[in-house]
Image (spheres, one colour):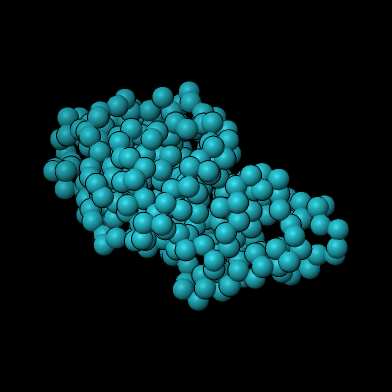
Length: 336
Protein backbone atom coordinates (compact mmCIF):
# COMPACT_ATOMS: atom_id res chain seq x y z
CA UNK A 1 0.00 0.00 0.00
CA UNK A 2 1.28 3.42 -0.94
CA UNK A 3 0.40 5.25 2.28
CA UNK A 4 2.43 2.81 4.42
CA UNK A 5 5.26 2.08 1.99
CA UNK A 6 8.73 3.41 1.23
CA UNK A 7 7.51 5.42 -1.76
CA UNK A 8 5.56 7.81 0.43
CA UNK A 9 8.01 7.79 3.35
CA UNK A 10 11.27 8.22 1.45
CA UNK A 11 10.52 9.26 -2.13
CA UNK A 12 7.57 11.67 -2.01
CA UNK A 13 8.69 15.26 -1.47
CA UNK A 14 6.95 18.42 -0.36
CA UNK A 15 7.73 20.63 -3.34
CA UNK A 16 9.91 21.16 -6.40
CA UNK A 17 12.34 23.28 -4.41
CA UNK A 18 13.23 20.27 -2.27
CA UNK A 19 14.03 18.25 -5.41
CA UNK A 20 16.18 21.06 -6.79
CA UNK A 21 18.18 21.21 -3.56
CA UNK A 22 18.94 17.49 -3.78
CA UNK A 23 20.00 17.70 -7.42
CA UNK A 24 22.15 20.74 -6.82
CA UNK A 25 23.78 18.97 -3.88
CA UNK A 26 24.53 15.95 -6.09
CA UNK A 27 26.28 18.20 -8.60
CA UNK A 28 28.19 20.08 -5.88
CA UNK A 29 29.19 16.90 -4.03
CA UNK A 30 30.66 15.33 -7.14
CA UNK A 31 32.66 18.45 -7.88
CA UNK A 32 33.90 18.39 -4.29
CA UNK A 33 35.04 14.78 -4.75
CA UNK A 34 37.02 15.84 -7.79
CA UNK A 35 38.67 18.65 -5.86
CA UNK A 36 39.51 16.29 -3.03
CA UNK A 37 40.93 13.46 -5.13
CA UNK A 38 42.82 15.41 -7.80
CA UNK A 39 46.15 16.83 -6.69
CA UNK A 40 46.44 19.43 -9.43
CA UNK A 41 44.24 22.50 -9.72
CA UNK A 42 40.82 21.92 -11.28
CA UNK A 43 39.20 24.21 -13.83
CA UNK A 44 35.57 24.21 -12.69
CA UNK A 45 34.46 25.71 -15.99
CA UNK A 46 35.26 22.34 -17.58
CA UNK A 47 32.76 20.56 -15.31
CA UNK A 48 29.05 20.27 -15.96
CA UNK A 49 26.76 22.93 -14.57
CA UNK A 50 23.55 22.03 -12.80
CA UNK A 51 21.59 23.29 -15.81
CA UNK A 52 23.51 21.08 -18.26
CA UNK A 53 22.94 18.07 -16.04
CA UNK A 54 19.22 18.74 -15.92
CA UNK A 55 19.03 19.13 -19.71
CA UNK A 56 20.70 15.75 -20.17
CA UNK A 57 18.47 14.08 -17.58
CA UNK A 58 15.33 15.48 -19.23
CA UNK A 59 16.54 14.38 -22.66
CA UNK A 60 17.38 10.82 -21.64
CA UNK A 61 14.21 10.57 -19.60
CA UNK A 62 12.32 10.97 -22.87
CA UNK A 63 14.63 8.52 -24.59
CA UNK A 64 13.76 6.04 -21.86
CA UNK A 65 10.06 6.53 -22.59
CA UNK A 66 10.69 6.04 -26.31
CA UNK A 67 12.60 2.83 -25.61
CA UNK A 68 9.77 1.48 -23.45
CA UNK A 69 7.06 2.49 -25.94
CA UNK A 70 8.80 0.72 -28.78
CA UNK A 71 9.72 -2.38 -26.78
CA UNK A 72 8.76 -5.78 -28.18
CA UNK A 73 6.90 -7.64 -26.80
CA UNK A 74 4.76 -4.68 -25.77
CA UNK A 75 5.77 -3.39 -22.36
CA UNK A 76 3.00 -2.73 -19.79
CA UNK A 77 2.66 0.93 -18.87
CA UNK A 78 3.33 0.07 -15.25
CA UNK A 79 6.83 -1.13 -16.17
CA UNK A 80 7.53 2.13 -17.99
CA UNK A 81 6.24 4.10 -15.01
CA UNK A 82 8.51 2.21 -12.62
CA UNK A 83 11.54 2.63 -14.89
CA UNK A 84 10.98 6.39 -15.11
CA UNK A 85 10.68 6.69 -11.33
CA UNK A 86 13.91 4.71 -10.85
CA UNK A 87 15.67 7.03 -13.28
CA UNK A 88 14.45 10.15 -11.46
CA UNK A 89 15.31 8.77 -8.03
CA UNK A 90 18.81 7.78 -9.12
CA UNK A 91 19.68 11.27 -10.32
CA UNK A 92 18.35 12.95 -7.21
CA UNK A 93 21.54 11.88 -5.45
CA UNK A 94 23.95 11.17 -8.31
CA UNK A 95 25.67 13.35 -10.85
CA UNK A 96 25.54 12.88 -14.60
CA UNK A 97 29.32 13.38 -14.53
CA UNK A 98 29.62 10.18 -12.48
CA UNK A 99 27.04 8.04 -14.29
CA UNK A 100 26.19 8.47 -17.95
CA UNK A 101 22.36 8.63 -18.25
CA UNK A 102 22.54 6.94 -21.65
CA UNK A 103 23.82 3.87 -19.86
CA UNK A 104 21.68 4.10 -16.74
CA UNK A 105 18.33 4.33 -18.56
CA UNK A 106 18.77 0.77 -19.85
CA UNK A 107 19.49 -0.51 -16.37
CA UNK A 108 16.38 1.24 -15.01
CA UNK A 109 14.21 -0.36 -17.68
CA UNK A 110 15.73 -3.81 -17.12
CA UNK A 111 15.26 -3.67 -13.35
CA UNK A 112 11.67 -2.44 -13.76
CA UNK A 113 10.88 -5.46 -15.95
CA UNK A 114 12.05 -7.74 -13.15
CA UNK A 115 10.29 -5.91 -10.34
CA UNK A 116 6.95 -5.75 -12.19
CA UNK A 117 7.30 -9.40 -13.32
CA UNK A 118 7.32 -8.56 -17.00
CA UNK A 119 9.04 -11.73 -18.06
CA UNK A 120 11.55 -11.05 -20.81
CA UNK A 121 14.95 -12.68 -21.04
CA UNK A 122 18.12 -10.64 -21.04
CA UNK A 123 18.59 -11.59 -24.70
CA UNK A 124 15.10 -10.35 -25.56
CA UNK A 125 15.75 -7.13 -23.68
CA UNK A 126 18.93 -6.11 -25.50
CA UNK A 127 17.40 -7.40 -28.73
CA UNK A 128 15.35 -4.18 -28.72
CA UNK A 129 18.52 -2.19 -29.41
CA UNK A 130 19.46 -1.49 -33.01
CA UNK A 131 22.94 -2.91 -32.59
CA UNK A 132 24.90 -5.81 -33.98
CA UNK A 133 25.52 -8.89 -31.86
CA UNK A 134 28.69 -7.58 -30.24
CA UNK A 135 26.96 -4.27 -29.42
CA UNK A 136 24.08 -6.09 -27.73
CA UNK A 137 26.45 -8.25 -25.72
CA UNK A 138 28.30 -5.16 -24.60
CA UNK A 139 25.02 -3.49 -23.62
CA UNK A 140 23.99 -6.52 -21.58
CA UNK A 141 27.33 -6.55 -19.76
CA UNK A 142 26.88 -2.92 -18.82
CA UNK A 143 23.29 -3.40 -17.63
CA UNK A 144 24.23 -6.38 -15.45
CA UNK A 145 27.27 -4.56 -14.07
CA UNK A 146 25.19 -1.49 -13.16
CA UNK A 147 22.17 -3.28 -11.73
CA UNK A 148 23.45 -3.66 -8.17
CA UNK A 149 24.66 -0.06 -8.14
CA UNK A 150 21.19 1.11 -9.15
CA UNK A 151 19.53 -1.00 -6.45
CA UNK A 152 21.92 0.37 -3.84
CA UNK A 153 21.32 3.97 -4.89
CA UNK A 154 17.58 3.35 -4.63
CA UNK A 155 18.21 2.24 -1.03
CA UNK A 156 16.71 -1.13 -2.02
CA UNK A 157 13.29 0.55 -2.20
CA UNK A 158 12.11 -1.18 -5.37
CA UNK A 159 8.33 -1.15 -4.91
CA UNK A 160 6.79 1.66 -6.97
CA UNK A 161 3.08 2.41 -7.18
CA UNK A 162 2.05 3.95 -10.49
CA UNK A 163 -1.16 5.87 -11.37
CA UNK A 164 -2.50 3.23 -13.75
CA UNK A 165 -4.29 1.03 -11.23
CA UNK A 166 -5.83 4.01 -9.40
CA UNK A 167 -7.06 5.22 -12.79
CA UNK A 168 -8.92 1.94 -13.32
CA UNK A 169 -10.42 2.27 -9.85
CA UNK A 170 -11.54 5.85 -10.48
CA UNK A 171 -13.18 4.98 -13.80
CA UNK A 172 -15.11 2.12 -12.22
CA UNK A 173 -16.03 4.32 -9.27
CA UNK A 174 -17.35 6.99 -11.63
CA UNK A 175 -19.49 4.45 -13.46
CA UNK A 176 -21.04 3.06 -10.30
CA UNK A 177 -21.28 6.09 -8.01
CA UNK A 178 -21.65 9.11 -10.27
CA UNK A 179 -24.36 8.55 -12.90
CA UNK A 180 -24.30 12.27 -13.73
CA UNK A 181 -21.00 11.68 -15.56
CA UNK A 182 -21.95 10.00 -18.81
CA UNK A 183 -19.59 7.59 -20.59
CA UNK A 184 -16.56 7.77 -18.26
CA UNK A 185 -14.73 5.42 -20.62
CA UNK A 186 -14.59 8.22 -23.17
CA UNK A 187 -12.09 9.91 -20.85
CA UNK A 188 -9.67 6.97 -20.85
CA UNK A 189 -7.59 7.85 -23.91
CA UNK A 190 -7.02 11.43 -22.81
CA UNK A 191 -6.11 10.43 -19.26
CA UNK A 192 -3.58 7.87 -20.51
CA UNK A 193 -2.00 10.55 -22.70
CA UNK A 194 -1.88 12.87 -19.66
CA UNK A 195 -0.14 10.16 -17.61
CA UNK A 196 2.34 9.52 -20.41
CA UNK A 197 3.19 13.21 -20.47
CA UNK A 198 3.42 13.23 -16.68
CA UNK A 199 6.24 10.66 -16.80
CA UNK A 200 8.59 13.35 -18.11
CA UNK A 201 7.84 15.59 -15.12
CA UNK A 202 8.49 15.36 -11.38
CA UNK A 203 4.88 14.74 -10.37
CA UNK A 204 5.73 11.12 -9.50
CA UNK A 205 8.03 12.49 -6.78
CA UNK A 206 5.55 15.08 -5.50
CA UNK A 207 2.16 13.36 -5.24
CA UNK A 208 0.53 10.00 -4.69
CA UNK A 209 -0.44 7.79 -7.65
CA UNK A 210 -4.14 8.26 -6.87
CA UNK A 211 -3.82 12.04 -6.86
CA UNK A 212 -1.99 11.95 -10.20
CA UNK A 213 -4.69 9.71 -11.68
CA UNK A 214 -7.43 12.01 -10.40
CA UNK A 215 -5.61 15.06 -11.79
CA UNK A 216 -5.47 13.32 -15.19
CA UNK A 217 -9.22 12.63 -15.08
CA UNK A 218 -10.09 16.17 -14.02
CA UNK A 219 -7.89 17.71 -16.70
CA UNK A 220 -9.34 15.62 -19.51
CA UNK A 221 -12.91 15.94 -18.24
CA UNK A 222 -12.55 19.72 -18.11
CA UNK A 223 -11.38 19.79 -21.72
CA UNK A 224 -14.40 17.68 -22.66
CA UNK A 225 -16.77 20.06 -20.88
CA UNK A 226 -17.47 17.61 -18.04
CA UNK A 227 -17.24 18.83 -14.46
CA UNK A 228 -16.05 16.42 -11.76
CA UNK A 229 -16.39 18.96 -8.95
CA UNK A 230 -19.53 17.38 -7.52
CA UNK A 231 -17.93 13.93 -7.73
CA UNK A 232 -14.96 15.15 -5.72
CA UNK A 233 -16.80 17.25 -3.13
CA UNK A 234 -19.88 15.09 -2.57
CA UNK A 235 -18.60 11.56 -3.12
CA UNK A 236 -14.83 11.45 -2.61
CA UNK A 237 -14.53 13.88 0.31
CA UNK A 238 -18.19 13.69 1.40
CA UNK A 239 -18.68 17.45 1.74
CA UNK A 240 -15.57 17.96 3.88
CA UNK A 241 -14.67 21.52 2.83
CA UNK A 242 -11.13 21.49 4.20
CA UNK A 243 -10.19 18.25 2.46
CA UNK A 244 -12.00 19.30 -0.66
CA UNK A 245 -10.07 22.56 -1.00
CA UNK A 246 -6.81 20.79 -0.18
CA UNK A 247 -7.42 18.10 -2.79
CA UNK A 248 -8.50 20.58 -5.46
CA UNK A 249 -5.37 22.65 -4.84
CA UNK A 250 -3.18 19.57 -5.26
CA UNK A 251 -4.95 18.61 -8.47
CA UNK A 252 -4.52 22.09 -9.92
CA UNK A 253 -0.80 22.11 -9.12
CA UNK A 254 -0.32 18.74 -10.81
CA UNK A 255 -2.23 19.86 -13.89
CA UNK A 256 -0.07 22.96 -14.19
CA UNK A 257 3.15 20.93 -13.88
CA UNK A 258 2.12 18.43 -16.54
CA UNK A 259 0.71 20.98 -19.00
CA UNK A 260 3.86 23.09 -18.71
CA UNK A 261 6.15 20.16 -19.52
CA UNK A 262 8.05 20.70 -22.75
CA UNK A 263 11.05 18.81 -24.09
CA UNK A 264 14.34 20.72 -24.03
CA UNK A 265 15.29 22.29 -27.34
CA UNK A 266 17.57 20.40 -29.71
CA UNK A 267 20.13 23.20 -29.54
CA UNK A 268 20.21 23.12 -25.74
CA UNK A 269 20.56 19.33 -25.67
CA UNK A 270 23.36 19.35 -28.25
CA UNK A 271 25.20 22.03 -26.30
CA UNK A 272 24.82 20.01 -23.09
CA UNK A 273 26.10 16.87 -24.86
CA UNK A 274 29.16 18.73 -26.08
CA UNK A 275 29.76 20.02 -22.56
CA UNK A 276 29.46 16.44 -21.27
CA UNK A 277 31.99 15.17 -23.81
CA UNK A 278 34.38 17.96 -22.89
CA UNK A 279 33.89 17.24 -19.19
CA UNK A 280 34.54 13.52 -19.67
CA UNK A 281 37.73 14.20 -21.61
CA UNK A 282 38.88 16.71 -19.01
CA UNK A 283 38.32 14.31 -16.10
CA UNK A 284 40.25 11.61 -17.90
CA UNK A 285 43.11 14.00 -18.49
CA UNK A 286 43.19 14.48 -14.72
CA UNK A 287 43.18 10.72 -14.18
CA UNK A 288 40.10 11.01 -12.04
CA UNK A 289 38.25 7.81 -11.16
CA UNK A 290 36.04 7.06 -8.19
CA UNK A 291 36.68 3.71 -6.56
CA UNK A 292 33.29 2.24 -7.35
CA UNK A 293 33.67 3.11 -11.02
CA UNK A 294 37.01 1.29 -11.19
CA UNK A 295 35.11 -1.91 -10.49
CA UNK A 296 33.03 -1.34 -13.61
CA UNK A 297 35.27 -0.37 -16.52
CA UNK A 298 32.36 -0.54 -18.94
CA UNK A 299 30.84 2.51 -17.32
CA UNK A 300 34.02 4.38 -18.13
CA UNK A 301 33.18 4.31 -21.81
CA UNK A 302 32.78 7.94 -22.79
CA UNK A 303 29.88 9.45 -24.67
CA UNK A 304 31.77 9.36 -27.97
CA UNK A 305 33.53 5.99 -27.68
CA UNK A 306 30.85 3.65 -26.36
CA UNK A 307 28.94 2.25 -29.32
CA UNK A 308 26.32 0.45 -27.32
CA UNK A 309 25.54 3.65 -25.43
CA UNK A 310 24.04 5.10 -28.60
CA UNK A 311 20.56 3.77 -28.03
CA UNK A 312 18.39 3.69 -31.12
CA UNK A 313 14.79 2.78 -30.53
CA UNK A 314 12.63 0.72 -32.83
CA UNK A 315 9.57 2.17 -34.63
CA UNK A 316 6.92 3.29 -32.17
CA UNK A 317 4.25 0.82 -31.11
CA UNK A 318 1.47 1.18 -28.59
CA UNK A 319 2.35 -0.39 -25.22
CA UNK A 320 0.01 -3.02 -23.85
CA UNK A 321 -2.64 -1.95 -21.35
CA UNK A 322 -2.08 -3.05 -17.79
CA UNK A 323 -4.51 -5.66 -16.45
CA UNK A 324 -7.55 -4.06 -14.91
CA UNK A 325 -7.13 -4.29 -11.14
CA UNK A 326 -9.51 -2.35 -8.95
CA UNK A 327 -7.78 -1.08 -5.84
CA UNK A 328 -9.10 0.89 -2.93
CA UNK A 329 -9.22 4.61 -3.42
CA UNK A 330 -6.71 6.19 -1.05
CA UNK A 331 -6.81 9.74 -2.32
CA UNK A 332 -7.89 11.32 0.94
CA UNK A 333 -5.41 9.50 3.14
CA UNK A 334 -2.61 10.42 0.73
CA UNK A 335 -3.06 14.19 0.99
CA UNK A 336 0.18 15.41 2.49
